[in-house]
Image (cartoon, rainbow, N blue to C red; front, side, top):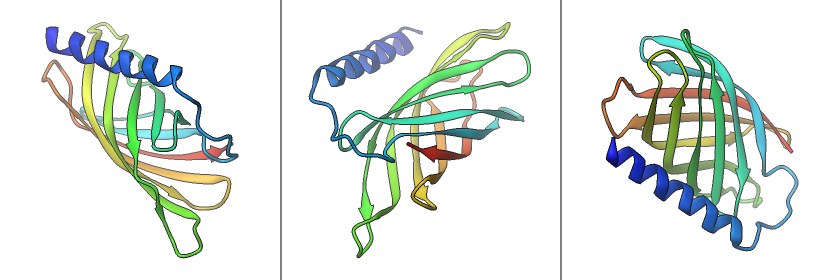
Length: 153
C-alpha cells in the first residue's frame, strides 16, 4: 500500500509541475473525449476516456468506467510519440506512462498501473484508442485492455 501511495504522490507531483510549465501550443484537435470498452477482471465494462495535451509530448488521460458493483475512475499521465507520415499529418501516436485507478465499489481500492497503447487518427475529428494497463500490485487488480473512440476538439 505504501508503494501505491508513493506512486500516487509522484504522479500528482508530476501533474502539478507540468501545470506550472508553459502550456502546449493551442491546436485544434489535440484533445479527445469519447466512449470506451474496458476488458479485464472477468468482465467488459463501458465508460468514457479522454485525452488532454499538457505539452507537446505529454497527455493527461482521465477516465471513468462502470463495472458491476461500483465505479472506477482515475487518470493517466503519458509520454506520446508522434509518428508523422510523409504529408506531416500524425496518423498514429504510441504512448507509455502510468495510471491511477480508484474503485469506489464495496471493495474499494486504489491501483497504480503501467499504461501503454496507441491513438489512431481516423479522420480530422475522430480518433481510435487501444491501451493496455498492467497493475504494479496484485491488490484485486487485473490487466485491463481498453478500446475506445473519441471526438477530437
